[in-house]
Length: 451
Image (cartoon, rainbow, N blue to C red; front, top):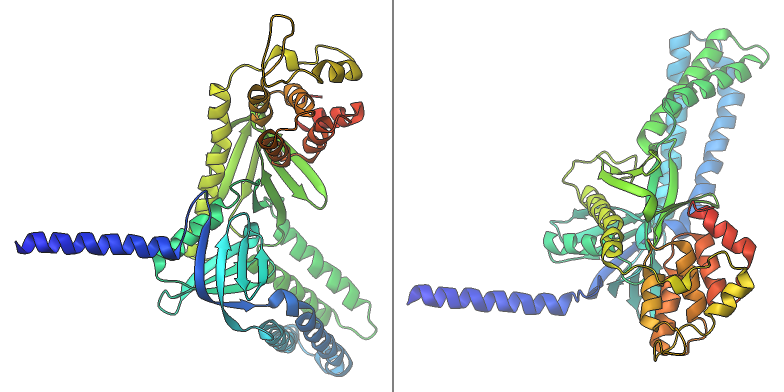
């Protein structure tokens, strides 16, 4: 009897926990919402200019003071003593500069009660105002205050401290952040490998340049110039080691048709059809292309020095697993999708003739004994299949251009918007508007490696 009562109590407690959890967090279609939580935004991005100007102004003043007052004294000291004196002066300047930057970052931060929602971005809503932060910008996470405060840090330094109800809720939130983008393209910050020994070569080059510059000053001894160069080279290497410099950060966009790496206004697109295999690495993913090329990138920040069980590592591991799933998912969809209809192919026709032949191809009634037509669902399947040939996808967009049905138009716009390649997306947009140009088609074919 007691055992039955205990089992019933456990069942009631489990049901109550599930009900409470569903009221606190609504997860559906990769979305999550936390109601009425304490949120503190450490507005480093807003106070960045103030802190940086104040800090570097003071550091410039300290450097000028060192050159004007300390230079006549330090330059005549032995090598070790000169190195020690310069290290103390510069470390003092760096410490004061860092303190000023921290004060500027803390300026304006305040705690408020807000609602946090995660879908294609992280939204903090309070009193009719909404703060939007791209989930791809969230790079770090950790728990503090006995697992009651989750801190999320973006790559721009903005820190969000969110009150949570335990580590399980924190892990669930990180899982939602890693998967965010239910209808839009999936985005993430990735880090491309730097050339080998770039950090050491850069430190030596900076140190040698400082030695030559200081040695040109009148009255400078060789020991003082060597001390300055050694100090600058070691400082450069130490800062590079802490920050992961040199790192080549890029924005990764995963769409229906492939992956796009964007950096400094340039884009490299890799179609899913060109990816032969995707393998997880210690810090990211390695792609093996059909041409034999290996493309490797990291999703973990280069400066991360925490243990493998940290929340930052958990966030990066979840992003890596979700990315591998996105890469493999189109492969399975393409295997089960029907063969592209011959009616959509260009077959060597001039572009105006191709457009004219597709103008009345899609109808709701389907084919008759007089005319050969295509159902809208069939054309949408071809357009939404990222592994379908580009020519067929563009033909499907041109065939669907005259449609006025609301659901078909929505799926048409969504299929175009979720293309990772900018050139392919432009070609699909022009095709859907009936204004496709031959040059646009050529650029799209070159982007997917078909030109």
